[in-house]
Amino acid sequence: MPNSPLILFIDGNLSDREYYTQCLRISCPHFEIAHAATGQYGLSFCEREPVDCVVLEIDLPDMSGFEVLRRLIPHAQQHGIPVIMLTRLSNPQLLEAAVRNGAQAALCKGGTSAEILEKAMLKAFSTPQVNLTSHAEPEVGKDLLRQLASEIRLDRGKGRAQLVGSNGNRESFEVIQFFQFFMGLP
Image 1: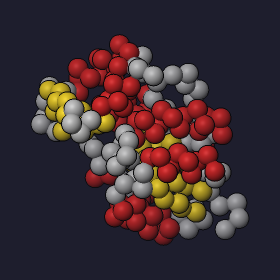
Image 2: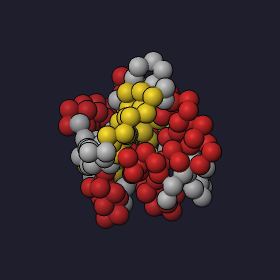
Image 3: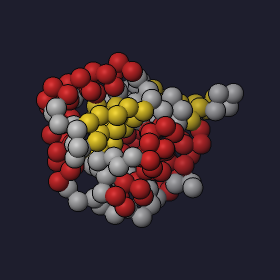
Image 4: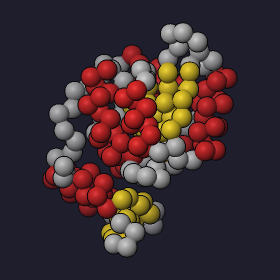
């Protein structure tokens, strides 16, 4: 469909991608929807295609959604592309961190209907992009880390870091993305 907004879903979970795609095709038949199952494919797709909005999961199979967000924001700002985080992770601090680091909105899948996602996308389309010169400053990342985790586990063999929140929730990140995001490393 010519001049249809192109929405890119970057999410490693096939059933989630299909569910939200089906719902949006019903409520927004004028949207064209593309999929990426990995962060790397999503980033390369954004460089090749004129994407109008990116819907991004934090927990991806090849890299953290925060790493995708960090790498995507300069391109997104240059082209006015809103990024919406839609994740299965229900930690409010992660959702807040996504918005502070350039996402137009951050939503938890468990409480997000297609109608809520559509409203977030339409609002993002009409909101000017905020120019971020960098992601969280190191001290902000350290403060966020202290708020999020009652325990941190590093699995050197798998190259993963796991945060265990005070509520018992566990969030897993690749170690390099963990340090880049929370400690402000390049």
